[in-house]
Length: 136
Image (cartoon, rainbow, N blue to C red):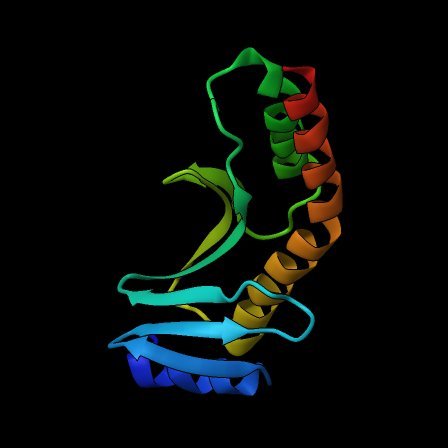
């Protein structure tokens, strides 16, 4: 199993700014991305989480159906690692990787997939929110 020290060495090899904010908890700051990816060492997995955007107000309103539908479509067809979800009023991208057989290549692929998805999908997702808010 990958140790905390092994994981930390993987993080530094990603060639991004790495800040340890707590024991086993890091912020990864990719270039050209304002939101850091949170990396948490929680055996038997490592968790990667990226805030995409705040959840629109009145999230249970049925007018938000197009946004939620698109998130599910992206989960099914366009996300290589991880998935979109809703947590504490935010839309997030997250992935959990098993530490048992984790190697650097898998870690890098997951990290890059989250960054690429967030960067590529955000304009479309954000575009759905103003249209919904203006209907009200």
